[in-house]
Length: 237
Ligand SMILES: O=C(O)C[C@H]1NC(=O)NC1=O
Image (cartoon, rainbow, N blue to C red; front, side, top):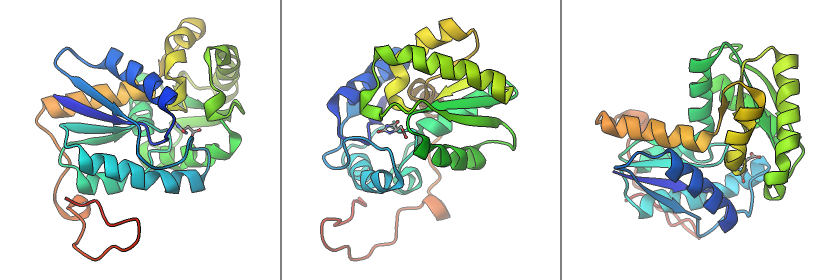
């Protein structure tokens, strides 16, 4: 099977981090096609960035039919719109990570980048999870493009604080750029630490293997035909 893994920001180095995590998680029969969009922000750290990332996500989904698509940004930008264009499953990394977390413990905490992105994470938790599953969202105040292997200590220290303060038992990494910190953080913390990229790829694989796809009925049906002007000439097939 072919899974398209989209980095919604335009930073190739981050796409490489995402691709490595996706390939490590994928099964032997899965081809990972990681892509960087042709348009959008260099990183996504605000509602404005998120809005401007969506056209690039939709272009990617429309241009490359795949058995499934992963949106590899913790804000899950364009997830519902992408489901109207795709035929296979479309999975966001926040969605996958949060669902996985609810299967592994009684409550999870999110460790993310800038404090201003905490509201989005809370909103997504309210959509995806039962009440009280997400016990807290904590910001490292590390900008997305400043994440590096040296960020591990800060991420782990904040995760320890989160586990104690929130009374949670699982950690969700709140940025695709943290994917390469997951194994080391898991070893340090001794609790499940979830990388949304890996969770989304394996969830997408499972759905495809079960022969399941996005429902074409009603809300996720292809968008109604209409005129689009300017840059956004529309991406519907
Ligand atoms: O919302 C965040 O801080 C993380 C999010 N931003 C980004 O460019 N890739 C992400 O996963």
